[in-house]
Length: 359
Image (tube, helix red, strand yellow):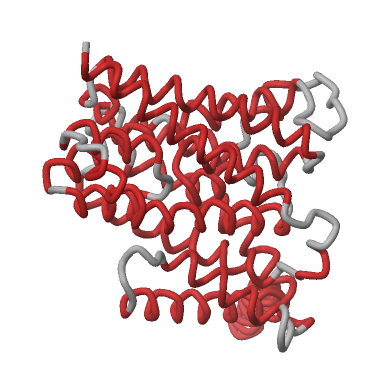
């Protein structure tokens, strides 16, 4: 009597194993080709970046590789689902983990005067960019991405904001390309301007930390001037990065309450549930935990590294989704907006920091 029971039990276990494995196989077949493609390109971008001057970030190279492939040989149809899930899902996870390396004490360490200048510049540039974007007739989501990329911290801010405002790959591609171009130019131009104007180490460091976008570019420009300027620039930039958390939370609520330029107003029903996506909550919780010292330094570094990898993979997917033929209706207007925003931020930050230094 025991044998049939044993045999039946074995059959049930095999059936259960098959039922469990089948969804995994199905998902692997659907998303595997695309995920594999973006991971390979991300790895290639990291390898190339390690062999080039360090002002050339791996994200920039990854997007260029993706755009090149999309507009030459094309993306295989079988890879498109995996590419889409990389942008939609992996990006959110990467942004959430980004909070593990942010610490609010970095904001306090900049000092009240410097922090006030940073906040004033951020808010002023956000308002200016959104206003000018409306005048130029740019899509609302693209305008917001260029605004946060300029005001906060370049590609990381764009990556964090894109899912909050439900931006598509085209808008993200435009914003990243615009912001990256000015960041690379700033690395070479700012040190020259600083020496010509005879800036002190502190003034130059504060200016670069508040006006240049990507952290690697801030570091390069700051230390190209002097070691003291580089250290001051990094501190201001870390404070600026940390302010990304409150900004994203505010954008979530604002975008749910009303339309960004060029978008239709959304209904206020279930506002709080819709205003704060789960990945934003995760970002804030991790940032608060890290600020309170609850996350060990090694774990913070590991989660931050994983976040960078996920964001790189997601932005490679953005490049793979960038079809140049879809850009013709917008033309050079995003570039003009980027020029205006970067110029306003640079002049405003320099004027305000110079005023506080002479007081």
